[in-house]
Image (cartoon, rainbow, N blue to C red; front, side, top):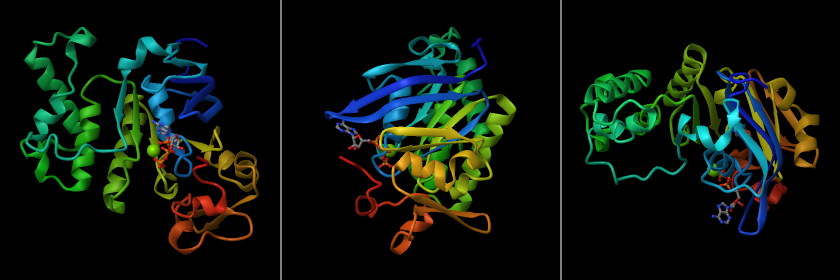
Length: 283
Ligand SMILES: Nc1ncnc2c1ncn2[C@@H]1O[C@H](COP(=O)(O)OP(=O)(O)OP(=O)(O)O)[C@@H](O)[C@H]1O
Ligand SMILES: [Mg+2]
């Protein structure tokens, strides 16, 4: 494959944690500008995958290529927003300083001491996340949705080509979720940014994402929504009969033969009931 044809290629990725294989024989091929939703029950390996792509998680085996080149050399081109937000540590910062703190001009050959370049990069990142009006606010004064947008702005302050967002929608109301989704979509379409976003509920992403990556039992299935979100594909992945029900535009994914108890079914995946259904964390 030539440079630029694939943003991200993985072949036979295997990742073990605490003596247990979390990801096994995972193959991926993601094009530049694609918005990929990453799904799977708690413990399916979503965070592990993002960390493996970043080089934070060693691979037992497999090959990884980013932007058509050996993975290791291009990792600076990835932005990352982790699942767990270290609340409080940066609360004394203004939003502008918080975003600027991640600037690595020197690494990009732009000159670390060039305050003008940095200011420009910070402004562009804030603008991309529609946060220009909040630049002088303190981090501790932001709402949850605003804070999440500030975290994404920080990940965008360097000229990254791939953005990994780990559960950026959790704890946000539908409006705040849509705002982040629309921004991610726009960055993919307009700037060719490639986005991998993990989430628990597939529904908010349905009208925004290009591809779905579903993880279960260490394996993964990547494809269009129609290719992946159907009974046969998910049954093969989970190893038990799965069904997909639709209520208007809303999608329910559940083991064939019954919905999850209580509120679990409304999410594409079960949470607390995952072990009961045999779909969750197999640790
Ligand atoms: N440092 C570690 N040592 C041992 N096991 C780990 C470690 N980190 C993660 N794991 C295990 O790896 C598995 C995958 O975890 P991971 O965090 O990738 O799942 P996830 O899909 O992101 O889950 P969630 O939806 O809860 O965020 C889990 O069984 C977890 O307990
Ligand atoms: Mg996770």
